[in-house]
Length: 324
Ligand code: SF4
Image (cartoon, helix red, strand yellow):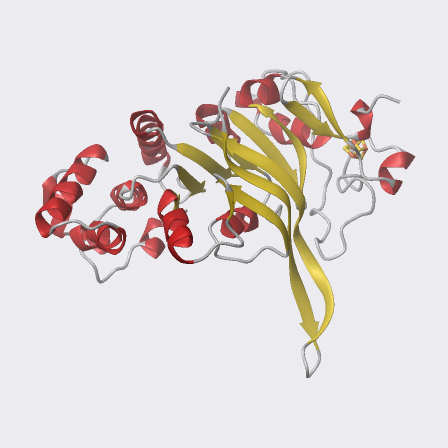
């Protein structure tokens, strides 16, 4: 059995809403509201949901770009919200990220060899020659030749720039890479190449990925497990095959039926009710999805559904599956 590499326990991230001259706190945006999951060693876990569901906030908390309001993020043995010094530096080395727009994440004033050398110089005691060798090897691994070494980001295509961002992410031999919509800013033809590269690298380097995306075809292609999130809470999680073949949660069913090419139960066409998801400032009581759910019952408005296991490793938060 694969061991957990990262465990997120009851994570909450609330952003204060301030008003008035003295910035009095008048409420909170509950972007992430009690989320628990783990990423196992060597697996790809996809976190999928509409924009505003809280998936990017979860990634930012794991990357320590934002501080959780409460909860724990355990990597190996350590709660990373409590570590500092050498342990924190090691964590930053072991957990890397690739973001949506490579041109925003690469320094436009630096050449490719400087971009790739920088993390090596900061984290590893290597000679100049060893760094040069590593940079050449990194370019080889991501499928670019050494002529790219002296180019600036503006001289690269979108796909080439994303390859460089991936090379920088793997330079320090991390265990976990967070992929935040890594192909959504790229042309369709290039998206497949980047996904293939990510799959190859995962096998070759023994990486784990946490993929943040709204694109269900990517989820189906790349992930071992899938977690569906709505308004800061997990609605359903399980092996990707099971989620796509037998989605249980009404929200997952609606999400999947909106992409008929990848949904196996094509006869069950369901449409998402009109309107935006409710505001995370004042999320609905009970099940957060009840205001848009075609199967909502009176109980759904009153009580938050309990998480129920419907199959091995397949969990659903919906009253329809709670045995009475
Ligand atoms: Fe729909 Fe009720 Fe299930 Fe929520 S708990 S998804 S409202 S049936």
